[in-house]
View 1 (cartoon, rainbow, N blue to C red):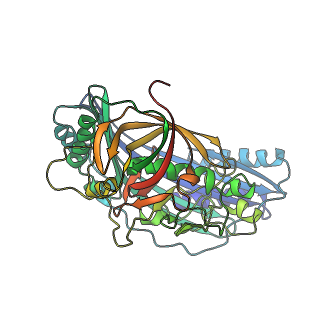
View 2: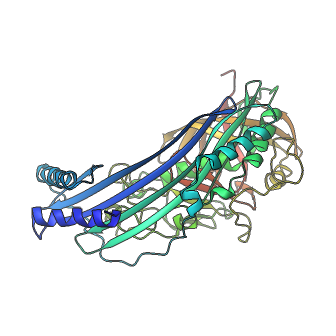
View 3: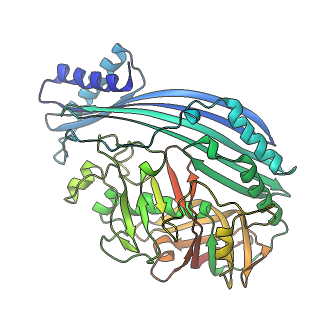
Length: 465
């Protein structure tokens, strides 16, 4: 049976077992993932797999329970329904039950790229080969992946939905003398991933990172490349624009307040790239403005958190939202000019020879009096969720910039920084013109951002401590 038929069958089984007074919603998703991994400059793993998940939520006699499984046989579906209904009878009453999504028109999603959805292993291998060759003998490692997801939804209110998403992504490093350079890109089409361009960028960064100097801790002006900005967007999403955190007053977000620099506009926009047109409650998804010219304008909600604040769901229900809360997963930081939307980095002419791989970043670096160019952030952990104070480390390349010129590689630094404060009014000195889509560890999560020039970033430690 198709995903749509399976979802409808699960709902019908609930009707038969629990009667007409039962409320139920079912989501069936099938994910196909193909992954080509490489290390020590050769492919060591090529895997492909397909998984199916059936998720059921029921509300019976004022009590709510959720169950899931991967068995789609008639017996498997009946067992899922039976144990979920048993769980509902054992649960405490749920007075905050938000009800089911009524029949609602679905938005049109971008057409999936069939060549990407059914890409052969040698197509991914060719991009790995190009990455390795472009690194010019440096040790390389990383992956190239293609994925697709089919999802269907049905509930006892008569609402149904169906969607599909396809994504390609590449993430690789080049290494020399213990120094790594990185390049990443996600796209709707495998054809938009150029392994040679990414490999050349990673290798140039690695070569430019040798013999680093140690700088003292302190506040530095910074230019963050898209990979580093992606960490800002991810933490702002999970902890700040989270509807549960907002409803419980644990988020920094204040709707209508000018909390960010006027240069900052953030939009959660799943249909601008790989994303499904509905969430697991069947709510349609579309562009959600989070920050408009510096003013906080929205947070992500599922039906439960929306009801708690007297709003409506924004289509961000997920398997994590009942506990952690609903959060955006496809944020775009809009570039300096609205017309400059592209699917990948602008390419500099000629050979890439230094840490600045594109003219977009170079233009921001040219405006730095004395500061740092940062490729990537990692191992970031939230210290204060309300202020969104985060600690973490730089990674894959840091360079000193003096009078607009990259002068020396710098050893990695630890930072402790309130992310909203770093983006506050007057703190953003510049934005690039070209957004670069960054892949996350799991699909279909991605962050689209240009490079970013900030007035101050608080580095609290160096290699010595």
